Image 1: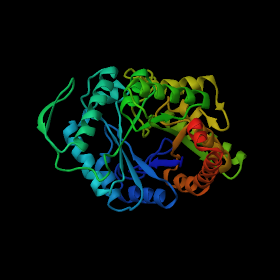
Image 2: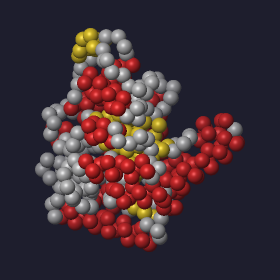
Image 3: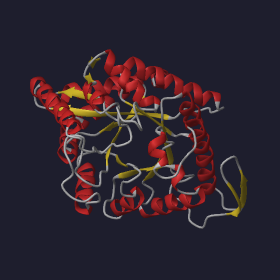
Image 4: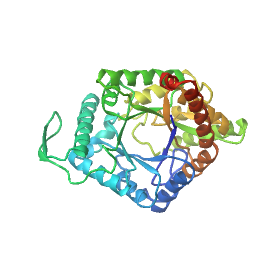
Length: 382
C-alpha cells in the first residue's frame, strides 16, 4: 500500500523552540511553507485548530487557490459551529481545492481549552457530540433531498445543502484520540485514525483497539492509521543527537522564561491545569517517565519538556535511521506518516529531500515483494 506524508500548514514561523517573528497569520510565510511541502514530496498538510489561533478554513482556502497538488487536512472542533454550516464550509473548500480536502474532527481533550470558546460539556459528552456531528456532516454531503434531524445534541428541520463536494461520495474524515471513548467514536466514523508517536509495541496495541472498535461498530473495513512524530535529523548520528539536545534545551529555556509556546492548552503545574486531562498526553508523559529512548530512534525528552503537548515525541538520527524507524511503523500497519520539525520551513525541506524518498523506495520494494508472494500476503501483513 502506498505510504503518505502529512506535514504542517503553520500560519507563522513560531514553534516550541522559538517565538514567531511576525503576525499570527503571516500570509507570505503560510504560502512559502505550503509550497515547500508541495515541492518536496509531501502529500498533504494539516491546518491545525486552536482557540485563539487564526481560523484554519480560510487559511486552507488561501493555499488551495494558490497550489495545485498539495492536499489539505482541515482541523475542526464541533463546538465552534453548527454541523449544517460546517458541512457547507467543507463542501465549498473541497470545490475550491478541486477535491483535495480531508476534515480532521477534534473532540477536545482539555476542559480549560474547550471553555475558552464556551464549550462546557464533559469529555464523554464531547465524544458523543462529535460522533453525531460527523454523521450529520456525512449525510449533508451525500443527501440531495431535505431531511430532519432530531438527535441528542442537534435538531433541525427540512435542511438540504446546495453545495456538494467534488469528491464522491464525500471527502475523507480524520479523527484521533487514545481513550476508550475516542476508539469507539473514531472506530465507527473515521476513514483515518490519528495517533501520536509511541513505542512500536504500544502503537500496535492502539491499532488493535481501533480495529476492534470498528468491528464493534459493524464495519467491514477499518480506518487507515496515521502516526505523528517530530523528526530531528542530521548528516551523522552524533550531529543528530547534538541537535536533539539543543532542541530540548531550547524548549526548556522558553518554559523557564515563561514564554508562551504554540501549544497552550496542556500547561502543567498551574492551578487551571495541573496535569494534562487527555489520555494521549498522559500516555506520552508515562512513556517519557519510563525511559528516554525506545526502539530504533524514538526519543521522549521533547514530549516531557512540553508536558506531553500534542505531537511531541521525536525520531532522532540520520535520514537513513529515521526512514528505517518510520518503516518499522509502516510494517505495523501505519500508512500515513505525520512529521513536523522545530524549524518548520527548513525541516520540511530537509525531511522531504532526505527522508521521504528513502521511505517511498523501501515501501515500493516491500509491496512488490509481497505482491510477488501472492495476493493474500499483503492483506495478511497490513
